[in-house]
Length: 85
Image 1: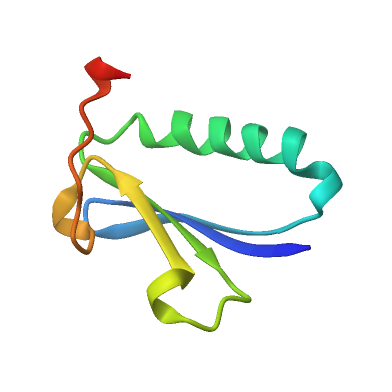
Image 2: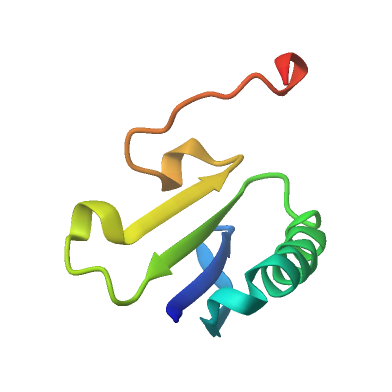
């Protein structure tokens, strides 16, 4: 089982936080549904970040995964050109 904390950050504030326990057998259905719900919510903000915290990961350098449109809220952001996907 993977324990996650998922946060939506916009306007420099946490807009939502959800804790989820994901069983391996449920990953294929649960994770896409969660991602879709959070993405729809974050569309209301021009600049935003989704942060996924892996609660059982002891290494702080590997514990967090952040993505979004607000590089000022991320550590060492990497630009992704979506036109080349």
